[in-house]
Image 1 (cartoon, rainbow, N blue to C red):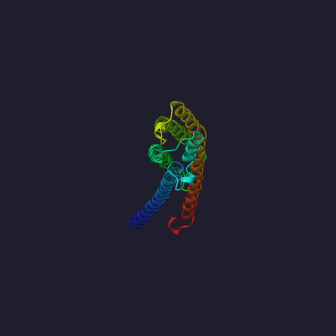
Image 2 (cartoon, rainbow, N blue to C red; image 1 turned 135 degrees about the vertical axis):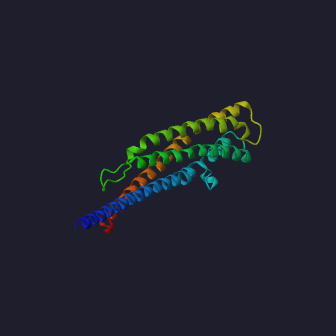
Image 3 (cartoon, rainbow, N blue to C red; image 1 turned 90 degrees about the vertical axis):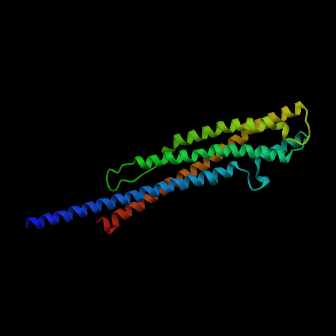
Length: 230
């Protein structure tokens, strides 16, 4: 009888250990699925959304920087050097996007740390990322991109105004054009770009929050209804 009880106890212990291992594996799968959601969300945000705002648009008519240059050139009765313009603006956009792109890893690392640091207090405790969790990160990204935008506008565009037109212009015209371009870049363009980035980020943050909630619902449904855990 003693041997039988010991064997039954051993079977019980093995079943309990197996159940705990299954629960642990289920939670790790849930956790890894959220990490994958974060990475995919950041990829779309930077590689598609923010990229579309900074990089050259598919149509010249959509190029708000070029349209502004053409407008200024028309008013000053000078002709835009298209080849030089493309080189200068391409360099500006390339450097700005390269700078912005580094925040993809920072965003991933920040959000994944929240997931990694999460500890379940019970089997039904779910991973959550809230809107307030994004505040400090998004504020830093916006501030950094704004600062870089100002620096690159000056370095790449304003300082090269004399190379943007097809004929020599007198100093007075160059100074006037430089002032107008600088004013546009520091006001209208900067404001529009940062507002559009804010909107794209907000949409992706909200999307991610909802996807994580849905993933939690799937996890919970399996936890409650799968015969493995009953």
